[in-house]
Length: 71
Figure 1 (cartoon, rainbow, N blue to C red):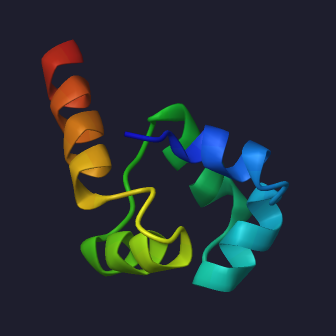
Figure 2 (cartoon, rainbow, N blue to C red):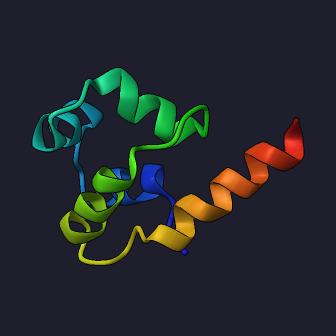
């Protein structure tokens, strides 16, 4: 499972450019990269399509489990 931060770095995509393509703020993408927040379900599908399936629903579900376990 590929991390969003790694995907953006490896493909030389800035958080700002990624955010613009999704219609969200760069701060939102930054929070996703750091695991501080998760995108809405509709955005998860868009992200999967934009990344050619590299960032999947399972990735986000795993992050959500980690966040719950940390509480």
